[in-house]
Image (cartoon, rainbow, N blue to C red; front, side, top):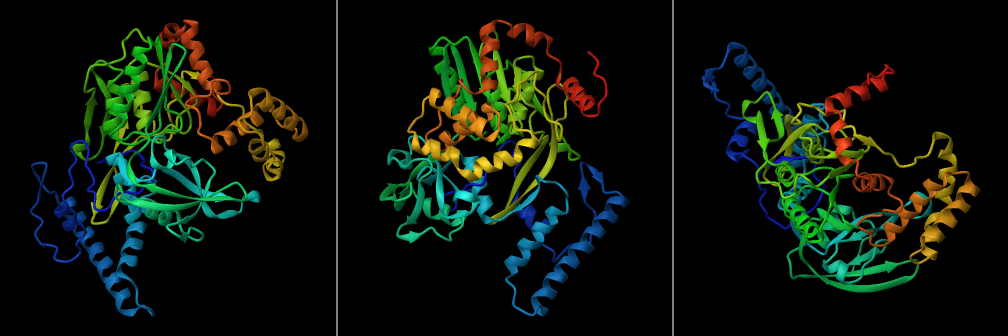
Length: 513
């Protein structure tokens, strides 16, 4: 299984992890790697058809010595610590330390809860009620004792029961959620399909009501789509086994509506499965390379090509929206479509995660290990650099001088109060409020408008797109409707050239045009 930054989710019990691509992990091999006892003394091993060299043999002896020391320390602690210690605690602590020592932010030990989350993402479904939850906060930023519904997933039991964003889950099956961790709340909400769970919901300051939900198979949300006039808008939230199918369905919908262009929104898409990224790229590309991986392990050096004929005609303009939250698998898609001359990138420089991880199970726990780096079809390496857009567009942001005024506005709770007191405020109401608040606090009106829209989307079902205030989406629409897409695409510079220009700008060097 290849991991391109999975979210932390839960899963039904005893669901096996599905290993994507060709990397199959043998538990027997892992047992041999991690068993510190009974290490054979003979080093007559063969790797890639060649006898192990003296240097490799020396490294093997060193590795065995350290493994033995670890076993001895483990046993010593068990025998001599002032208090009896759970061996699982020592094991998990040691494993955490091992991966932290690598200095690689993407390699890590995965406790049981995180392994369950990996399973949900790789399978794309889990048994639950369809509610995204988060830790709520009171005014002033203190943590609320209950969890808050961030958003119900459309079509799920929670959505059909009318649970809204901003609702608090006060009790689950008669047990208060006060003091429960997020993992404990998730474990109580999730379970086998067709089983019931009772919730006590608090809405606003005083309204409380019970809800009984029947659990169902929940598909991990991965795509949203809509028409913007004659332009198809497809937003991919993550890359799961379902993503390519949902994207294909969206493209079919666009065709029935006679679309003249596609906007593929990968903003704030943290990544997901490499397989899914390749399959999505294949919807837009006719043959050829999507991405290549390179590693010191020969088996990891691979080139991945498209797997099907493109369903989006070459005459259809494609614009990809990216920002600082576009990472990993989303960067593979953006990089492939740009390097292959298929799409124009609009927005901000992407996150810059150019490595591939595999997840290895060890019973109920496991670990994630970086095994290769990936390169775009144009041989660009993006780790720590990102992919710069062809057309840079940024949202208005606050300056350092605005921090104190913005903090005062947030602590005064003026924006949540406005949204709560105005059910579905009109653009005119939002504009008037933003101008008044901007003048009162000395802040940019556009920033206030964005904060109002964010708060409104937090407490209602967010629209698929917000063309009125989304300046990056506006630019993408204008490029397609303005008829200059081809000219911009033909004059676009490669990812490597854009990266070099970005480096020169950062270092204050003159750019060469």
